[in-house]
Image (cartoon, rainbow, N blue to C red; front, top):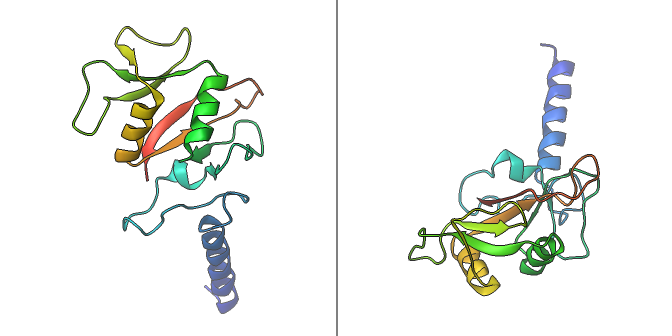
Length: 151
Protein backbone atom coordinates (compact mmCIF):
# COMPACT_ATOMS: atom_id res chain seq x y z
CA UNK A 1 0.00 0.00 0.00
CA UNK A 2 1.38 3.41 -0.90
CA UNK A 3 1.97 6.14 1.71
CA UNK A 4 -0.90 8.19 0.24
CA UNK A 5 -3.29 5.22 0.50
CA UNK A 6 -2.24 4.55 4.10
CA UNK A 7 -2.84 8.20 5.05
CA UNK A 8 -6.30 8.22 3.37
CA UNK A 9 -7.24 5.00 5.12
CA UNK A 10 -6.06 6.37 8.48
CA UNK A 11 -7.97 9.60 7.88
CA UNK A 12 -11.21 7.70 7.13
CA UNK A 13 -10.84 5.64 10.33
CA UNK A 14 -10.21 8.77 12.42
CA UNK A 15 -13.25 10.53 10.99
CA UNK A 16 -15.47 7.50 11.66
CA UNK A 17 -14.11 7.22 15.20
CA UNK A 18 -14.82 10.89 15.86
CA UNK A 19 -18.42 10.47 14.67
CA UNK A 20 -19.02 7.40 16.82
CA UNK A 21 -17.64 9.11 19.93
CA UNK A 22 -19.80 12.20 19.58
CA UNK A 23 -20.77 13.87 22.83
CA UNK A 24 -23.15 16.42 21.37
CA UNK A 25 -26.10 15.27 23.47
CA UNK A 26 -27.66 13.28 20.66
CA UNK A 27 -27.93 16.20 18.27
CA UNK A 28 -25.76 14.47 15.66
CA UNK A 29 -25.84 11.01 14.12
CA UNK A 30 -24.89 9.21 17.32
CA UNK A 31 -23.93 9.93 20.86
CA UNK A 32 -22.23 7.75 23.42
CA UNK A 33 -23.23 7.78 27.05
CA UNK A 34 -21.09 6.34 29.75
CA UNK A 35 -18.45 5.13 27.33
CA UNK A 36 -15.46 3.91 29.21
CA UNK A 37 -17.23 3.85 32.57
CA UNK A 38 -17.62 0.10 32.56
CA UNK A 39 -14.51 -0.63 30.52
CA UNK A 40 -16.57 -2.17 27.73
CA UNK A 41 -17.99 -0.72 24.56
CA UNK A 42 -21.70 -0.11 24.11
CA UNK A 43 -23.82 -2.51 22.09
CA UNK A 44 -24.01 -1.50 18.45
CA UNK A 45 -27.75 -0.75 18.54
CA UNK A 46 -27.17 1.64 21.43
CA UNK A 47 -24.20 3.32 19.79
CA UNK A 48 -26.27 4.31 16.75
CA UNK A 49 -29.33 5.47 18.67
CA UNK A 50 -30.08 9.15 19.14
CA UNK A 51 -30.02 10.06 22.83
CA UNK A 52 -33.11 11.83 24.09
CA UNK A 53 -32.65 13.94 27.22
CA UNK A 54 -36.01 15.68 27.48
CA UNK A 55 -39.55 15.47 26.18
CA UNK A 56 -38.65 18.34 23.82
CA UNK A 57 -36.19 16.09 21.92
CA UNK A 58 -37.53 13.93 19.10
CA UNK A 59 -36.52 11.69 16.24
CA UNK A 60 -34.81 13.19 13.20
CA UNK A 61 -36.46 10.76 10.80
CA UNK A 62 -39.19 8.09 10.92
CA UNK A 63 -37.98 4.74 12.21
CA UNK A 64 -34.96 6.19 14.01
CA UNK A 65 -33.74 4.34 17.08
CA UNK A 66 -33.84 6.48 20.22
CA UNK A 67 -32.41 5.93 23.70
CA UNK A 68 -33.10 7.62 27.02
CA UNK A 69 -32.73 7.40 30.76
CA UNK A 70 -35.26 10.19 31.34
CA UNK A 71 -38.28 8.99 33.30
CA UNK A 72 -40.57 11.74 31.98
CA UNK A 73 -39.74 10.83 28.38
CA UNK A 74 -40.43 7.13 29.03
CA UNK A 75 -43.69 7.79 30.86
CA UNK A 76 -44.97 10.25 28.22
CA UNK A 77 -44.05 7.83 25.41
CA UNK A 78 -45.87 4.93 27.10
CA UNK A 79 -48.95 6.90 28.20
CA UNK A 80 -49.40 8.43 24.73
CA UNK A 81 -49.71 4.83 23.45
CA UNK A 82 -52.04 3.82 26.32
CA UNK A 83 -49.27 1.68 27.81
CA UNK A 84 -49.11 0.86 31.51
CA UNK A 85 -46.07 -0.17 33.54
CA UNK A 86 -46.08 -3.92 34.14
CA UNK A 87 -43.94 -6.83 35.22
CA UNK A 88 -44.10 -10.51 34.39
CA UNK A 89 -45.90 -12.27 37.24
CA UNK A 90 -43.78 -14.47 39.55
CA UNK A 91 -40.45 -13.01 38.40
CA UNK A 92 -39.84 -10.61 41.31
CA UNK A 93 -36.33 -10.39 42.64
CA UNK A 94 -34.39 -8.72 45.41
CA UNK A 95 -33.76 -5.76 43.15
CA UNK A 96 -37.40 -4.89 42.59
CA UNK A 97 -40.23 -5.84 40.25
CA UNK A 98 -39.73 -8.82 38.01
CA UNK A 99 -39.16 -8.69 34.26
CA UNK A 100 -40.26 -5.18 33.30
CA UNK A 101 -42.70 -4.59 30.47
CA UNK A 102 -45.06 -1.91 29.25
CA UNK A 103 -48.45 -3.40 28.57
CA UNK A 104 -50.24 -1.96 25.54
CA UNK A 105 -53.94 -2.61 24.83
CA UNK A 106 -54.32 -5.83 22.87
CA UNK A 107 -50.69 -6.95 23.38
CA UNK A 108 -50.44 -8.02 27.01
CA UNK A 109 -50.53 -11.49 28.36
CA UNK A 110 -52.13 -13.22 31.31
CA UNK A 111 -48.79 -13.23 33.13
CA UNK A 112 -48.40 -9.44 33.17
CA UNK A 113 -49.31 -7.62 36.34
CA UNK A 114 -49.59 -3.87 36.59
CA UNK A 115 -47.09 -2.05 38.80
CA UNK A 116 -46.96 1.63 39.61
CA UNK A 117 -44.52 3.90 37.84
CA UNK A 118 -42.44 4.40 41.01
CA UNK A 119 -41.80 0.67 41.38
CA UNK A 120 -41.15 0.32 37.64
CA UNK A 121 -38.60 3.17 37.62
CA UNK A 122 -37.00 2.00 40.87
CA UNK A 123 -36.29 -1.38 39.24
CA UNK A 124 -35.23 0.35 35.99
CA UNK A 125 -32.69 2.40 37.95
CA UNK A 126 -31.38 -0.47 40.09
CA UNK A 127 -30.76 -2.62 37.02
CA UNK A 128 -29.08 0.28 35.22
CA UNK A 129 -31.34 -0.04 32.19
CA UNK A 130 -31.44 2.18 29.13
CA UNK A 131 -34.78 2.61 27.36
CA UNK A 132 -34.33 1.99 23.63
CA UNK A 133 -37.40 2.87 21.55
CA UNK A 134 -38.98 4.32 18.40
CA UNK A 135 -41.49 7.12 18.11
CA UNK A 136 -42.62 6.06 14.63
CA UNK A 137 -42.09 3.14 12.28
CA UNK A 138 -40.42 3.90 8.96
CA UNK A 139 -43.82 4.11 7.31
CA UNK A 140 -44.77 6.93 9.70
CA UNK A 141 -47.22 4.97 11.85
CA UNK A 142 -46.91 5.13 15.64
CA UNK A 143 -44.49 2.58 17.04
CA UNK A 144 -44.76 0.66 20.30
CA UNK A 145 -41.27 -0.83 19.90
CA UNK A 146 -39.10 -0.59 22.98
CA UNK A 147 -36.33 -2.57 24.57
CA UNK A 148 -34.75 -2.37 28.00
CA UNK A 149 -31.03 -2.87 27.71
CA UNK A 150 -27.90 -2.18 29.71
CA UNK A 151 -25.01 -0.01 28.67
